[in-house]
Every structure is written in C-alpha cells, then in structure tokens.
Image 1 (tube, helix red, strand yellow):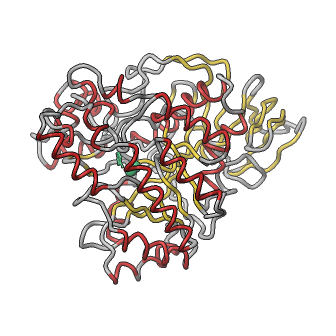
Image 2 (cartoon, rainbow, N blue to C red):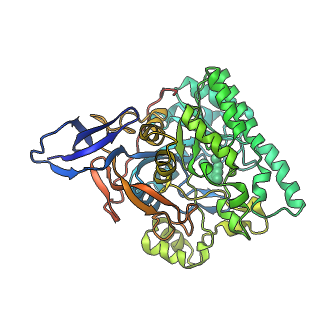
Image 3 (cartoon, helix red, strand yellow):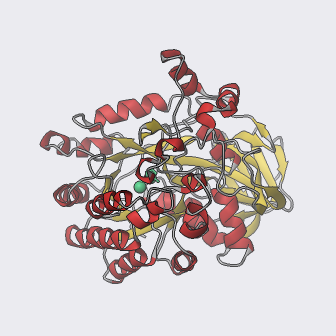
Length: 491
Ligand code: DUC
Ligand code: ZN
Ligand code: ZN
C-alpha cells in the first residue's frame, strides 16, 4: 500500500501541472492523471500545491562561534525546518585547527545523531596543512563534495589566498565545488579597531566595519581564481551590488561561478534594523551585514535574471536575552537534547548570546534565525508579489540546491524515482510569523508580525508524514545523511 496524493498541482522547476502522485515506500513511483486509488492511503490535495521538500544548503546548527554556540541543533533545527517545508539541509563542518577533516566530520556526525530531516555536510577548510590537503579526495568517498573557505574572520576561520587557490586546484581535480564566504577579512580587521577607538561601538557600526566594497573585492578575487583553475565556485550569502556585479562578470566570461543570497538580505536594512534603538540592532548582526533597499532590488533582479541560483538562510541563531531568562526553561521543556547535555556538564552553565557584544559590536555573535521562515517569506514576497513564478521558486529553494550540490534527482524535485520529500502547500493559508509560534529555539525572529499567505500544511520525508498542521510526527533518527555526488553540474 502506498500514499496517493490526489488532485493536487505538482510544481517543479519546469512545470506546474495538475496530477496525482503515488508514493510507495520512500520514493515517488508514479505521476499521472486519475491514478487508481486501489488500496492506497489517499491524501486529498484539491486546491493545494505539491512542492518538493525545500533544501537549505547553508545552515550552522550547534556551531561553536563568537564565544558561544548557535542555539538550534540537529533536533530543534530540523523540526523547525520541516514546519517551514524544508526537508533537507547542508550544514558546515568546521575543520578543527590542528586537526583533520575527519576529526571535524566525527564531531558533526555526533551532533547529527538526533536528526529528524535529511542532511549533508560541507567541509570548512581552516588549516590546510599538506597532510590535510591529501585528505581532500577521501571526502568525496564520504559523500562530502563541497569545500568552504572563509575569506573573512581573521585569526578565526580566515584562510589566505594561497590556501584558496590550492584548494580550488585540488577540488577541481576531484570534481568538488568550492564555496566562499567572500569578505576581505584583512580590511575588516583594520576598520573595526578604528571604529571602536572612535567610540563607535553600537550594533549599527557593524555595517560600517564590513562595507559592500570588501564583499565585492573578495567575490571578484574568488571568481577570478575560479576562472583560472576551472574549479566550480559557489559564493555564499551575497548581499550587495559590487558582489553581484563581480559574479555577473564572471558568468559572462563563462567561468563556472554561481551564487546564493539568504532570505534576510532581501528585506532587512542596516539603517532600520541594525540601527534600531538601544541594543536591539544586535538581533540583526550577521556577516556580511544586511544592506540597503537598493541592494534588495539588485538581489531580486539577480534571482530573476539567473545571476543567483539559490536562496538559503545562513541560519545561525543566538539568544538575544534568552540565555539568562525564561526562554532557557522553555527550550529545555520543548526539546534541547544538547542543551541538557551542556547542563549536565556544568549545572551553572548559561549559554551566552548577543549580549556578549554589549559595548562592542565586534563581539556580537554573528547570525540570526531563519530556517523555518525561508520558504514562506520567499513565497509571499517572491511568488505572491509577482517577482518570481512558482516554478522559479521551486528552482531556487529546492531544485538548484540539489543539482549544484550533487543530490539531484534523489532530492529537489518530484519525479518518478525521487525521494518522496513533499510539502503539501496551501496557497491560501494565512499565517503570521512570530516568535510565539516558531519552532526554532530562539527568543526572537527577524520577521516578527509579518503576514504570509501560503504555507506547508503537511510535510513528508521520504514518504513519512512528519508535519500535519501544527502537529509534529517526526522522530529523532528519521533524518539520514545524504552522500553527495562529485562532478555536479554548473548552472
Ligand atoms: N555569518 C554569520 O552571520 N553567521 C555565521 C557565519 C557567517 O559567516
Ligand atoms: Zn559566512
Ligand atoms: Zn554561514
């Protein structure tokens, strides 16, 4: 007996058609008109869309960063993702300094034990010693086919140009893709102390310490190296015109370069959000910084004209003040596997959050929540407001991420043989985004009070229903690691 999704409209990157979808076991086995219900469980999808489960290729779950650890883990983050229609994500393993890639992988595999949705790993290169360089090909055997390098965060994650270039050469030889966080960390590390010395310590100065030029410069550098080495490049979290222009030039040259932006960069501004009164702006500190309404227009244009291939979140959330308030108890009561583990190690432990940067913007942990809202917010402002078609939405949120990162067609589409990761999307369902109804482990969201029309009402992971309205049906351990293929296409 299978599950028959009847009378829905199936949306893929190329089509939007009324069809029935039969799922048997974990995969889609038939798509067609008037499929016989014979013995199958029927899900009436009249008036609903059937979307492939979303894929967020840029998350940081339980990341030790900025003097603390990001809040959502492979338990809470997965649940939140699924409530937003996302059924797979790729998280960044960080190579420990002095350690190997496999040391990093071991740590992240341990973190992923409670997985509730499917996941993959990128490998962040922080310390490319010769023996570590030799480890690169073995990552492909482990299903890890993407290497990430930070051109920023001096003395923390930042690599130099030699490392970037050599990694690209090696990646190209092995069919891997290189991802970059493109900001010139040396310039940032020069600007920041002078701002602080001038008494410019509030959250809003974070934007001045990381101006668009340093993003444009670093993007251009990585794009040129990609052209030189032939290594496919994916620039993460692009935010502004100089960076988009660098990517556009590279693509016009025929270089194998691609890019994403993240939900927040289409909406939030440095002036209003980072500049909010008091310490409120800390909620919005992420790197690169949120920019201007002009940059929002540039990004929308870039997703429309194909300069950008995907939209992800860079989900990396820290308490605003919950680390010391009632939210801590809320988190414990709701989930909190790792939370409990930390408590057990030290009963007086309070996970710090944004308050670490009071009086010094450079010490505010970088990042914000967004994993749950990505698809709803982009549907509302992309599809409902006529900026992109439903097919382009699916392409950006599901299909391109799967293709670029070697998961297609297992993931990222609804097709015979694909995993039955399906979001039953009600285009008429109205919802108000709020911290009071989020499933993320957070004491704030950045879209508080925003109204959306269009929401997943049921979500299936490989044929198993994990979300039904407000009800959670998933289980720890349901989520599986997705080994990814090398030599993925350049889009
Ligand atoms: N930027 C963020 O804002 N958070 C996590 C890492 C990053 O690059
Ligand atoms: Zn980054
Ligand atoms: Zn990131």
